[in-house]
Image (cartoon, rainbow, N blue to C red; front, top):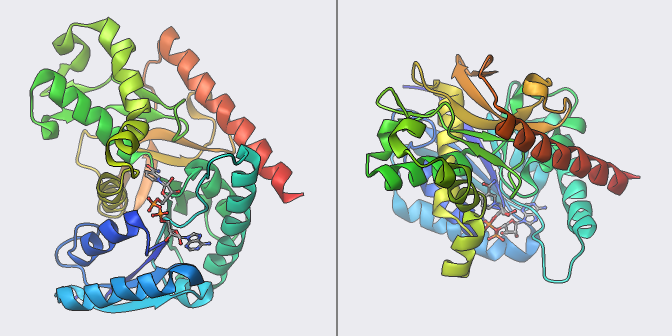
Length: 327
Ligand code: NAI
C-alpha cells in the first residue's frame, strides 16, 4: 500500500475549503489509490466551524482518508506536508483600498511562507488560490527562499476550465474534446484567455467557431468576468469550480499532463514570451515527473501581444504595491 500524502488546506473552514476537502479525501486530487492525511488550517474565529468540517470528514468515512489535523496553529498545520493548497486570505471588503487588502495578504503570506519553509516536507508543492493569487504566491516565494521557486504556483486553472467550458457550449461539443486554450498572466480581469492554439479533435477552434468577432470580444470578456457573474447569481463567489480546478492543477502537476495537451498554471516567470521575469505569471505548461515546463515556440500575434503586455504590466504593478506594503 502507498504511504499517505499529507495535504494542507488553509482557509479550510471557508467556502472553497468545504468543497475541496471531500474531493481530496475521495482521491480526486492525487488519485483513487493514494491515501491522504488532511491538514486543515483556519484562524481562531473560525475554529469551531473548522472542527465541524473535521466532524463531517469523520462522518463521511472516506476509505482513503488516514487522518485529519484541524488547527489554528500554523506550525502544526505545515508540519510534514507534501502538498499545500493556500486558500486562506483576507477578502476585500466594501470601501477597502487595494493597498489595504494587499497589505493584509502580504503579512499573511509572509508568515505562512516561513512556516512552510521550516516545517513542510522537502520538495513540498505549493498552490496559492487566495487572491491576489499571483502576488500572494510571489510573496510566499520571496519569504521561503529555500523552497525551490518551481514548487510555488498559483491557480489559473479555473479560468482555463472556464474557457474550455465556453468553447464547448458555443460549439456544442464535449468539453473533454476541447484542448489547449491558454490563460496568460494575472488571475484578474486583465488575464488573456487565448484560443489561437486551441483545438477540438485536431481542428483549430478558430476554424470551427468561424466568428473572430466573438472570439476576440465576448468570449474573452465572459471568461474574464465569470467570477463576477457567479457572485451576482449565487451571492457567493465560485467555490465548487474553484475546488475542482485546484484538484486538476495538483493532479496534472503530480501525475503529468496527457501527451499533446497543455494546461495553464501561474508559475515563476523566466521571461518567456517577453512576460516580465520575476513575477508569478500564468503560462501554458506541460507536466512530467512532478515538474512543469513552459510550452515554448507558440506564435503570438499582434492582438495577443498587447494583451500579454497589459496583464504583465498589472503584475509588475502589483509586485511594487506588495513590496511597498513590506517597508
Ligand atoms: P471564504 O471567506 O469563504 O474562506 C476563506 C477562509 O480563510 C475563511 O474561513 C477565513 O477564516 C480563512 N482565513 C483568513 N485568514 C486566514 C489565515 N491567515 N490563515 C488561515 N486561514 C485564514 O472564501 P472562499 O470563497 O473560500 O475563497 C477563498 C479565497 O480564494 C479568496 O481569496 C478568493 O478570492 C479566492 N478565489 C480564488 C480563485 C482562483 O481561481 N484563484 C477562485 C475563487 C476564489
